[in-house]
Length: 150
Image 1: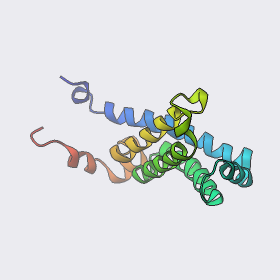
Image 2: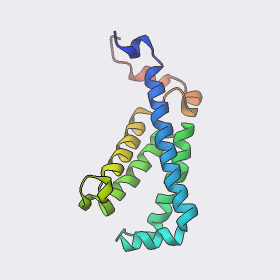
Image 3: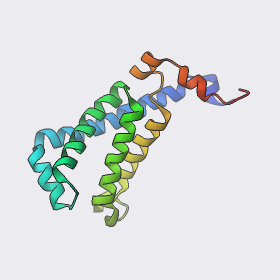
Image 4: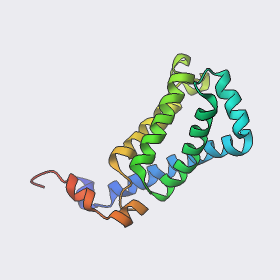
């Protein structure tokens, strides 16, 4: 028997752990952009890396990472936030990391790949029952996803 059948809360516990880890990581990066570097510094950095519309991109990255991270931690509007964060990481991949190889210690895309893929996973899987989304919208979505005959 599969553990998820014996312990139906395990997938939701996994989503909680993933949301918290990803949320804290994005809050830290968003806060760093907001507080340490500031909008002008992030804009200048993005301009130097050839990122299009550097001021708009800096605003998007800063606020999506900061507020999106908080939303992940709370588990609210996770499908939308996950998609926005995945888009943010796709931009980081495309404009900054793709030509640097795989490993993060050489500026590669390893880290943004994991962050983006995990954000997309949460966008597709949802927040789970241990979230504000779960409290507000209940298990309706989980019942709709049940395979036929189970």
